[in-house]
Length: 630
Image 1 (cartoon, rainbow, N blue to C red):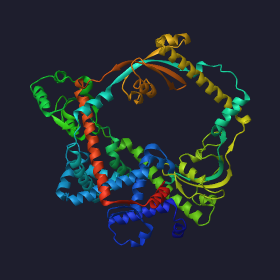
Image 2: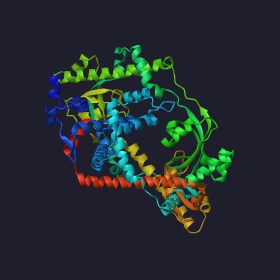
Image 3: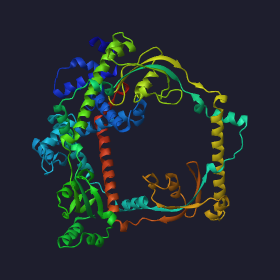
């Protein structure tokens, strides 16, 4: 194994193990590891703080794994397009600069202050509102942290927060800016529209050979067969090794206890609120409620509608921190005294309580056993993949190495880089192997890829047996596709011409209905909507139509491209926003502006720190990290 590691030092597995070793030494305080320094160059230098490649690599991998859990398999190019490494670097630089500033400013937190903050953290409290050590231990377990590591992170985050809050706390949003932004966001526009479908022009004639040749030449990319490769694929997955894994009752019980906070159904409460911009108004309303006034009546007196007061059924996690404790400490039918949050002053009333539920171990035993088994199978797959890599590094062929770990290699006659066979169907063995397949297409014919990780703890090693180059298909072979493309193009052009004709009639003083009636097209109403309405779930109007309405003058019309046709739209209605009738909405805009202004102040301060301390990035080291980790 040691020799294999030396000969495969550039492999992803060895690099990963190496970075973990370096990180472990740093965490456990083993001071003498100078023998590693030549292999662990400095990636970032922030003032006099040097960030080694291993540390940056570990943070990059953490973010990459998080992204993959959210979006599925991410290949190296996609990670670069996301700017993932740039984001990680900026975060490391941001935190380090603020740490140095806090130190220079003399910001220090005593152990007692940190302890009191931890004990008061709502995320670490149990149902009784007190610090819950079992919950604390579960959080440590779920995030793979020691208690000391957690306290260190908490202290650092809190110290940075003291600096940034001191900077952003005085941020002020001018009334004129709040008013203008509220009006801009909440103005609504409506109109009328006629849709001209491309399909309403079925007879567009027949293309000549010259027409087809022109369409063919303009769309070579559509008619080019991709490069295909013949591969031998060895896949090592947890599913393949499940039968070899045995799970004990104690392992199942441990899994249940660790997962219990996420297994249960959380308590929900139906909540109403009264929201005020100042404390005095909130106290006045609270006094009325204490005197027996009806909650809805007080809301009406303060011009707050049911849509504004009803928050619906919420969990503790649905609420901002300042509101969670008051809401979940009230009895059903009870209301709170005024509570301040970033949005203003709230009076909260609980109208209904749905108790939370936690399943017993017996109820979820099979689920827990299966998850433990799958995790252990993942560990077994990792071990087997290392044995596979060792065997290949020792001189075995991919087929021979697969036989040593009891896995049957799969021969793939031809596949493109997107894992599709020549018939367009996906190759099952390559599911979740995006990175491995990309690497296989960068590997010379007759060679093996390195061991690469796919989705869900699955590992791949691929031998490239043959290469069929990409080639442009002859026109005769794709004639039907070219004809279909020509017809689609002509239908779209006809629809556009018809829409332009209708627009011209409207511009010559005809109504939209009069202009569309000769073509037997119906006029539809576009209900008034805000600028961003087209992007909201369930939107009935496309973003393109909404955007065009906000660019038109009253009664002006325009042609807007749509899916499978063209729209002629006309602006008929502008509904101005009224800040005086929506105090809560105005306050929300004000709060958002304050946060943005505060954020800008902090960003400017960090840029000044960057200039003061200096930041150096070794791009070559960074590129090596992204190349290995992706």
